[in-house]
Image (cartoon, rainbow, N blue to C red):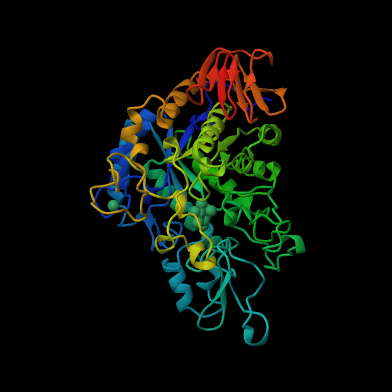
Length: 542
Ligand code: GLC
Ligand code: MG
């Protein structure tokens, strides 16, 4: 399996490690218990020392925070809770001085209902140009009292909300997040302006939210939902468990709201815009698509740079399942000459330590999966706190803030968004100068997991990430050869290094499997003893 053009002029992002900062929860500078831009800027040296190449910031634009920033009221200004435009500029300058790139989040599928365009649409009449920037429609049934179609919001409940004059507007997410009508050219023009605004300020790239959702099938027809796909039918369309259901369950067989062919025109236009700017600006698609082939369509050479490879994230703990994801990913991307990405955690899913069972075993598996991922050619995405081995937190109902919790009564995503513990013995664990719990309360047993505590311990998860990211710089090959040494063992060769992951429940002898035994990196202390690789362990050997 070979990647596209391994020339020395490869763009920085093709093999970058990109660290996701969830802005509300990384570091607080002003003591209000909510993370902010100056807080992040002050902690950038930590990320440089961790050894990542770039930082992706979740949305920090003006926003009522109904979906914590994914509801944008002004795309070209900073939410006062997080700082000012000057703070954003300072963050960019500091990051660049430290050798870190900065990727910002772009939310083009929907705005906040507080956006001036949506407010103007509400004030204007049905059929007006103001309404035509969003998806307003008349309802069905007597008095138009039924929604225009049967679509369901990703956050639960109907995807339509009725306004005073009786029309309905579409929101694939919360009712505070009205979907734009991307078939209206005004919308494309707005976003070209937004791209240029941030490119001019020096950002290195954009993570594109809900990239597969912008264009809907023009008819807005009903979605055909099979009996076996109805909620509660027990169907598990992605073959996954344990991930956040609201994010995974959107994949049904018939999807008139997702992944329409016309969406790719949007990304061709953005490609042309980015190409005007110096210095390898990039885009990465958040597209929960159905197959590796549909993922690959977003990264054709005249579209986006990257697409998140969620197949890796949703894979069960199984050598053959991981191997299939790797093989399918390379096969699909070879057709479009793109490079893969890999990701195990983000702000929408259950943290991978917890997905792999939690506790000591969950942590061992999480570290092993991470080391395997970091051994793969392509780019890897890390989510803040995974380098500390954090588990999903069971946030008590009275503190939950995820809109999907309010719409469905399901637990939601708050548990992976609890503020980072930096130091100290009790909350807020150095998160900020405030004395109280931050916006989501931190558990009282996190003292041993703080950055400060883990920096003292060579066996800590943080020390493991730092070593792995340093060792990764030695892996430069863009080719891998899959090996199948044993049923529960995933292995592949990259140059002279072999990456081995033991998904089985018993140790394996690498020498007996004909594999090398000199370690370049291991997923934990005692994982490799002599030539024996422990269960739930991974190594890079040569
Ligand atoms: C994306 C984001 C998620 C957000 C949703 C709506 O999936 O990752 O956090 O809630 O889009 O913008
Ligand atoms: Mg703050």
